[in-house]
Image (tube, rainbow, N blue to C red; front, side, top):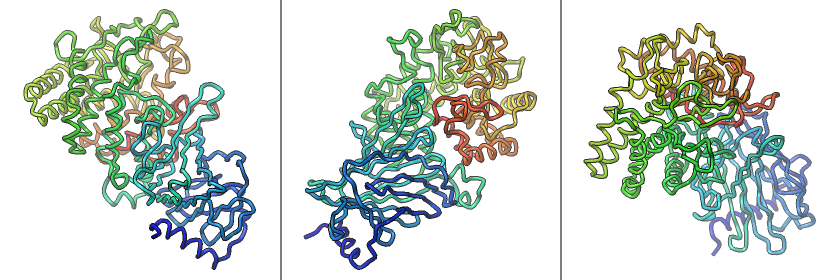
Length: 614
C-alpha cells in the first residue's frame, strides 16, 4: 500500500497529465507575502523575499545566484507548480523537484530516481544583505531537526514542516570572514532531496508572524517593526550549536539572559518547539563546558578573568527557562551545575560586603600601556573601563540570585535558598549608596578600587537598576529626571537609531580599546572618540532598560517619545546591514552614520520587550 506522501506525489503526477505542461521563460511567483524566482537550468531559487505582514515589502533579495549545475534540468509549469526534470527526460517521468506556491505557503516535493538522483535545494543567503537563521533543535553536525523556522530579520519567517518522518533535518552552515572577504559571509540552508531510503519527501513552508501581545497590535501599523522582528534576537550558530550574536558570529555567555527574557514571552514556534527550547539547548552547551567570550581564557593575555556579568547571565537565563517551561526534570538534573555557576558568582564578592568585584582595579589610566590594551574590563561593554565594583554586572546579579534562590527551593535545597536570598538582599542594601553620584544625580558605571566613581551618564546602568528594583521609587524618578535632562542638554533626539549607552564622552583614561574604530580617543577628554561604537554611539543594545524603567515609573509619554521612532527604525531595517563606509548599522553616530562591525547584533532587539511593558 502506498504511504500518504507517495499517494500525494502520485496524484500530482496524474493531475499534471491533464493540465498545461509547458516550458517556462521566467519561473516566478509573487503574492503580498513573498516573491520567489527560480533558476531555469536547475531546481534552485534565485530570489526569495518574504514579508510576514503581507504588506508587499518585497524589494531586497538576500539570495546568492546558484552556481553552474552538475547536469542541466528543464522546468515546466503546471498551474502554480513548477516541475524540474533532467534535460531530455519525458514529461511523464516523476519530477526530481516540484515547487508549488500559494499566497502564504510553499510546498516542496522530491521524488527519487536511481538513474538520476535529485540534487539538494540549497538556499545561500548573503549575510551582508540579511542575516538569515534557522531556528530549531540542533544536531551535533549543525543540522537542524524539523519542525524549524527560517527567519529573515527585517523580512519575516517561514515555519518549515514535513510529513516525511520525525528524524528529518535540514543542513545548516554559516561563515564569517575577515577583512576584504567579509563580502563572502554566508548562511546556507539545505533541503535534502528524496533518496533510496526515503523515495518521496515533502516540505511545507508557511509564512508566519510570531509575536506576543494583545490582538490589537496586529491592526496598528506603528507596531509593524515589533511584529515583524520579534524573533530577531534569536540567531542560532551552527558552528557552536547555540544562540549567538548572529548565525555567523560568536557566542557570548553574558548575553544569554537577554535571549531568555524574550524567549519567556514568545508564543510557541511550531508543534513541539518553543523559544525556550533554544535557550535550553544553549544552556546545555554551557553546562557541558562550551568555551565562550566572557569566560576566562588562559591563552589570551587580556582575558585572565571571568567577566563579572557572565555567571549572573547564565543563572538568570536558567531561571527564565525553568519558570517558563516548568521543566522540573531539567532543573533536578542540572541543579549541581547551576550551583557551580552561582558559587563562582558569589566568590566575586571579594570583600564580603555584598557587591561582586572584578580583579582589575578600574582606576583611571590602568587599562593600557600606551596604545596597548592590558586587560579586558568587567562586562559586556568591553571597550569601557568597568572594573572593581561594576554597577551593570551587579544589577544583573540581583535578579539572578533571587532566581537561584527559587530554583534551590524547587529542588528542596533550603540552605542554598536561604543563602542566595540573603546574598541578594545584601547586594540590594548597598547598591544604591555605592553607585549614586550626587554630582550628577544618576548612578555611576563603576566604583574603582581607589574609591572614585566613574560616571558618564550611562543610560543602560540607570535603566537596569530601576527595572530590577535596586532603586527605590522615590529615588528612581529623580534619577530619570536627571538622565533625560542630560539627554536633552546634549541634543540627542534620533531615537529611530536607538539610544546612546553614555551621553558624554568616555575619557581616554577610562577607555580600554584605543583603536579609533572602537571609539578609542586620542584626546584626554574622549571627545574625538565620541559617538563611535561603545563610546556613545546610538544602538538598540540595552535601550530596553531605559524604556522599561520609564514605563514602570508610569512615565508613558516620555517612553513613547523614544519607543515609536525606534519601532519605525526596526521596521525600516536601520539596525542591520553594511553602509557605504563599510561599517554596519548595529552601532551608529547620532547622524545615522554606521560604525559597527557585526552586521546584525541580536542584543539590539531586546528593546522590543518594551512594547509589552507599555
